[in-house]
Image 1 (cartoon, helix red, strand yellow):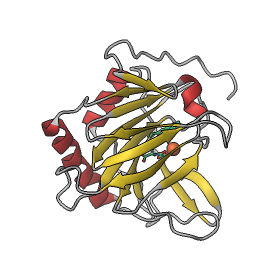
Image 2 (cartoon, helix red, strand yellow):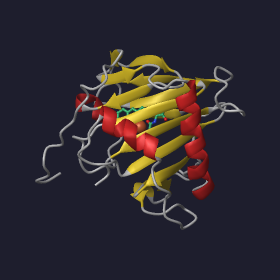
Image 3 (cartoon, protein in one colour):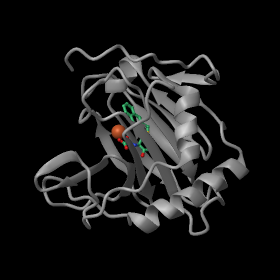
Image 4 (cartoon, rainbow, N blue to C red):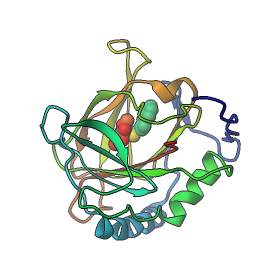
Length: 214
Ligand code: MD3
Ligand code: FE
């Protein structure tokens, strides 16, 4: 967090439809064709870097399955939460798909690319408890999230645990930009609503998050 130039963050190219807990929601930013194209990009990512269930530091597998693209992938095991340059099978992470990078450039900045595209997969019953994302070095960079597939109940609060929260349904094609005060907000996914989207042939939900790590 020392002596880095201030990122030039530009969100004036497309306007958010809603602001929730300080997060900008761009509802329905991707149409069905664009969503399907992203899913096909992700098939290549998952072929190179298969989904896995990270273990919490307490040794319990997370209900959300994950993989990543980019320089770093997010990873967790009994030694804790962290970013790694390698998939748990040992290979480097595949590149972030070009159309995902284009979204970052459109909504966040042309100044630099994100280091990580975390891919979260939610099957029926998967959820993500309230947490903060603070394994990154510079919180001035926002996190960008893309929702694909089944609807999800997203919850966001403030920067202290146990405070007031708001929730909203995220639908396939929705994009969130988590910057400013929202960057360190507690947030999570309460549940997904199975069968609400036909995007993924076997159902479920994918969330992509683009992050600057170091
Ligand atoms: C608010 N993912 O991967 S995306 C995560 O839908 C994560 O899979 C959820 O929380 C999901 O860490 C929520 C929206 C999101 C992503 C990152 C954030 C909200 C955020 C970082 C800071 C604050
Ligand atoms: Fe998060």
